[in-house]
Length: 351
Ligand code: KG4
Ligand code: ZN
Image 1 (cartoon, helix red, strand yellow):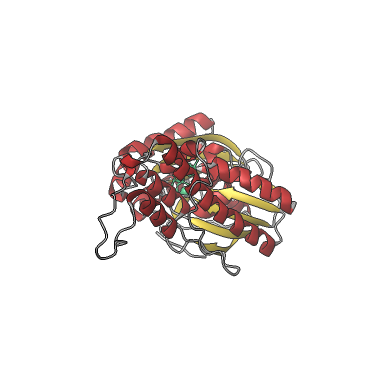
Image 2 (spheres, rainbow, N blue to C red):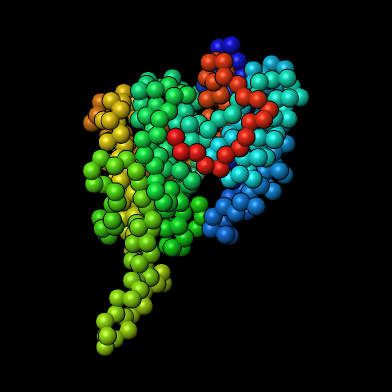
């Protein structure tokens, strides 16, 4: 079974993806249909639009991945699918497609947790990960730290109590008029900015907390740009209204860099705490935010200081894809774990 190929399907958010991965590692094909253009005008993912777009794209994406892989359905060892967490309507499209194929081809079905798959993405087209590891998974929907003892044994150490890091990037980019998705736009703008220009808050740093909170930071950026409401004393003149127009390009780059520095600082401090807590040999980054240039640089320096190996996925496997789903499912199959056709979708999971 070592070279066996698994077909994976991922539709948890706004990417319709299918991939074929051999031996849990070698990506034979990875097809992704992005819906970014459909959601851009709303500044975020609209669940109903996402579900409809998944229905329209799913069959051709599966066909494309199978064709590119050169693997016949009869030679597959299983069909994997993201079944939690995510947008429920979106998850159900992928789950229904996967169940149909598993039943029609007579192959085992394997349900995969999307966040666990992000923690596995760094092993794709690369060496196996050296465990135990501390994994920091940051995306548009999740920000969490895990202890990982193997690809399939993960324990949640902490997570966000409000916004996810990627969500904060998207909202702040919208406040700064930088477009959607916000992460890459802020990453780009921050390259010309001064990260020390504005001192934005770093939250939940006290004690040994491994949880995160980014909504206060987002509000701090909003107030910095639009002014703080209700700060006028009786008899005082109306303060000069601030707004995006009153900031020049350089100042916007400075705010972007200062916001990014605040997020990355918190992520670094918590990842360091988690690594020590776990006694980690490896640090893992995963999720869309792990494409961030500043985070990647800071994580590399941290790993060196701790004497750990840093594993970051290739850029295409940082964001949502099905190769990580198929790759991780191979380990479940190898351990004899499969799911029935009654496998359910779950919007949220906390474990
Ligand atoms: O993992 P992903 O594709 O989807 C979810 O599961 O949410 O992550 C998407 C998120 C978005 O919020 C996007 O703005 C963020 O990842 N992102 C980035 C960067 N590239 C994508 N955030 C910061 N810097 C980046 N370079
Ligand atoms: Zn994701």
